[in-house]
Image (cartoon, protein in one colour):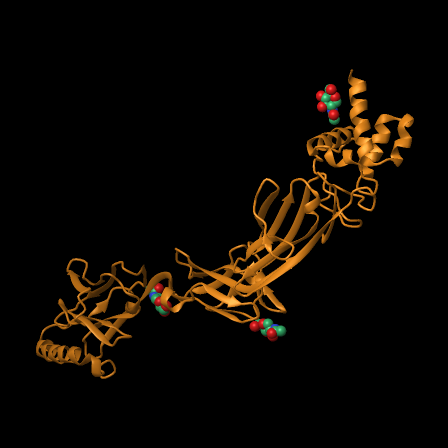
Amino acid sequence: MRRVCHAALNLLCCYVAAALAAQTETRGGKPRDPVFLGDISNQTVAEGRTVRFACRVDYLGPHKLAWIHYENSAILTVANHVITRNDRISVTHDKHQKTWYLHIADVKESDTGKYMCQINTASAMTVAGYLTVVVPPDIVDSESSGDVIAQEGNDVKLRCKARGSPKPIVTWKREDGNPITVNKTLSVIDHKGEVLTLNKVSRMDMGAYLCIASNGHPPIVSKRILVSVDFPPMLWIPHQLIAALRGNEVLLECYTEAHPTSLNYWTRGDSNMIYDSEKFHIEHKVGNPGYKIHMLLTIRYMEDEDFGTYRCVAKNPRGETDGAIKVYDAGPPATTTIATTIPTEVLDDINNQVLDRSPGARGRKRTQLQSPGKAVDGTLKDSSRPPYADGLDLFEISIGTGHRSMASRSLAALVMVILIINRTLLS
Ligand SMILES: *[C@@H]1O[C@H](CO)[C@@H](O)[C@H](O)[C@H]1NC(C)=O
Ligand SMILES: *[C@@H]1O[C@H](CO)[C@@H](O)[C@H](O)[C@H]1NC(C)=O
Ligand SMILES: *[C@@H]1O[C@H](CO)[C@@H](O)[C@H](O)[C@H]1NC(C)=O
């Protein structure tokens, strides 16, 4: 009896003492020691459910049966009485089955442990069963990171505190499925642990991170943490020199990167901001990732005053940058008044028609011209030739040998000839 009779079991000891007295008194009869009819089955239940332990005893006689929670050193019940103040505990007795039931309602994680069914014989008899309380994983928001904004080059520490039973495993992943760059030498698809440290973050680390907590008991939970990496604008210009012809459409392009998103605009020379108008079309395409912007400025038809320097500008709270694009006159040296007065539509039509005859050259509408050695968007393959040479070759092929001498004349003259021939052929 001494062994189980520690401080917290005082109450039981009182019962035991009383029972021993009773037992001694009834020794005269035909005493028979109690017998357990089997083990106590272990139980695994989800938090909030009700659980029941059964203890079968024969020949209990005048003895008392108590339920004890071993880890808490708590006597829960003695005979039909609930001793603990825990109102989730109750006890029932099925006389026919010789079974004593311990009921625990609304099970909590703290109820986990060993439950002993004990009989107050001279040396106490005990059987025990284990309660495992399963708590699905949960992420403690108050102890976990929220969205983070960091400057490029700084370290970022993300934390996800998970609760549950058994203890959940926390796994980190990037929402876009890309590897997580832990540091310069280590990239991983997933990272295990409540803390994820990103060393010296770069813009590539920007995005949503998920911490996922699981413990084998559904549902698996996750938290989404957005990591923003701020940096000053950067700019890249594919073509800084653009040759253009009067009356033609010209496309100017800049690529920018900035976070937070920069204010992007175009200027003429150093000052005047360019707005969308009949002459200019401005389009800024958001790239992927979203901190990349493709700036496009279309000059719908070049006039004398449109030659010169244009600037694309990008500004954000971290800084500002700009770059220049020079549009220069690629007109043939011997320009005539006819050349400058041919409407763009006519020129476009001619181009389209001529180009349509060359196999596989469909959809080639833009008449943008580039400075030598700079490829545009894949439409002008051999850009080392003079801007108008393309049309010229086709012209020669389609018209025939009789007009080969035309090649030496100006583009304007050629255009006129095409117009005339078209008319002649069709009439
Ligand atoms: C209950 O669990 C304990 C410990 O996990 C184990 O020693 C015991 O054998 C189990 N009892 C039964 C009846 O399965
Ligand atoms: C990168 O991180 C791993 C794991 O934390 C560490 O073992 C390694 O030394 C780090 N490398 C550098 C260059 O910091
Ligand atoms: C060629 O002539 C036809 C008939 O006059 C006309 O419809 C067509 O637009 C002309 N093509 C060009 C490129 O001028």
